[in-house]
Amino acid sequence: MKLIKSIYVIAVVGVAFGLASCGASGDNPGYEYAPQMYNSVPYEGLTQIVNEDEGQWLSTREDGKGEFFNTNVNNPSKMNMREPVANTVPRTKDGMLPYRLKAFELEKAAEIQNPVELTDQVLAEGQQLYIQFCTACHGANGEGDGLAGQVIGGVANLKGGAYVNLPEGHIFHVIMKGKGRMGAHGSQIPQERIWKIVHYVKQEIQKQ
Image (cartoon, rainbow, N blue to C red; front, side, top):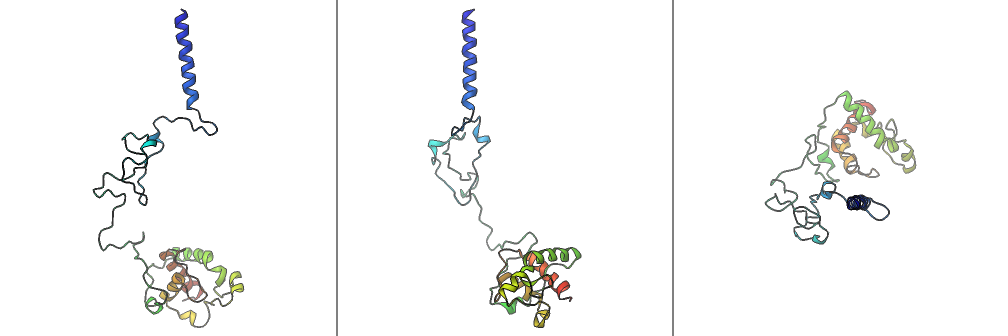
């Protein structure tokens, strides 16, 4: 009888100790059951490690490889990222090609037609984008009287002079690449959104 009680006591103490060892507190992270289920090994395209023993001292991987090994073994070139097919060009989700013209190629840009179809929704989106990116300098009505424009000075009045007759491609290029006091916005606004702003400027501000 005493033996059975002793076994029970030892079992209870063992279970309690096991549960306590799994708890995390302070600097102790505790233990995880099947840690690979929580911390998967990602394929990092820019930090590809081909040495299977890299990080072996730390490894808890089920495949026996080092913790830091992250090469895609299913790729015949042992690459995490496949190279694109030769002569392919990336496009946006709307099928637009990258804009290749340089800032000084304004005359070529002026010949480009707006590829975004003009609709009421496009005008509404163009208005919101104009408010977000352009109002500060050009003002709500495009007259160059925005709060930032008043401080900077020399901001174009989109309703006056030669600005009214500017081609859509010209306006797009200036927003994209910048000109004079106008900074380039190509890194902030995707192409298709810039074209929507152009629609809004031509249709609502310049009334064309």
